[in-house]
Amino acid sequence: MNGKLALALVLVLQVPEPDKELVEKYEAMKSVFYKRLMNAYSKVQAAVGPLTENLGKGHGQAAKDYIEELQGNPKFLSAVKIGTGLAQEAAPLVDKARMAGLGLYGHYVRPHVGTYLDEAITSIKVYLDKVLPAEE
Image 1 (spheres, rainbow, N blue to C red):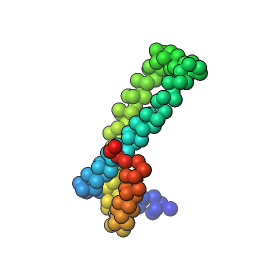
Image 2: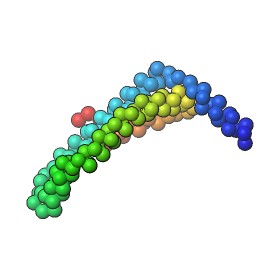
Image 3: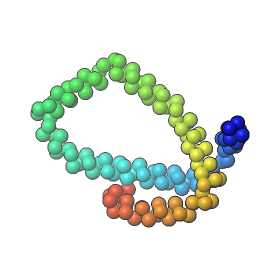
Image 4: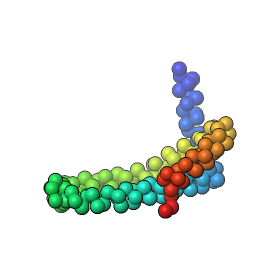
């Protein structure tokens, strides 16, 4: 048991740097993913927009009033500030963990499944471009 723990510790401490090509590919896929999400959000917003205007007369007005009241609440504003600060503090840690994960993937996993994963992503992109395009 101690040998397994020592091996895991050695592997964790010796995280290789990810390839520049792998990082660029990851960043490109991430930006396309966010574009797809924003495009889908705008489509949903355009479709639901007329419906929400009609809801404003009944229960929707009460919800709007509550949200406006909540935005003026100092406790809520301080909670938002704390959450924003935590997110800003965690961003470098998330980037470091992401780079470590990419390094581990690039060193240990990619030589074995990289081509299959690339082919799968390429074939899925065809369907995603039809259903959820990144550009309109």
